[in-house]
Length: 71
Image 1: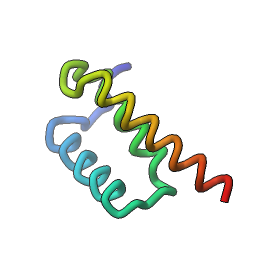
Image 2: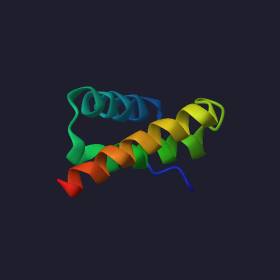
Image 3: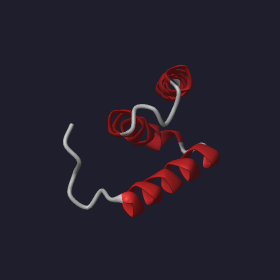
Image 4: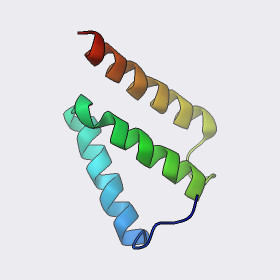
């Protein structure tokens, strides 16, 4: 995956802060965007987050999104 234009360190920090706010605020409708960011981050910096932690986080976000769809 190629780095999008303008995706420098400041932009990544901004998106990380926005993702953290979505998770802390439990805005389930935005969880797919957080998952997309996590996938990008995993591709861009593979050693930044442990694989197990990354997968558990993604699985939890997907489960919460699925529960919202069921309700």
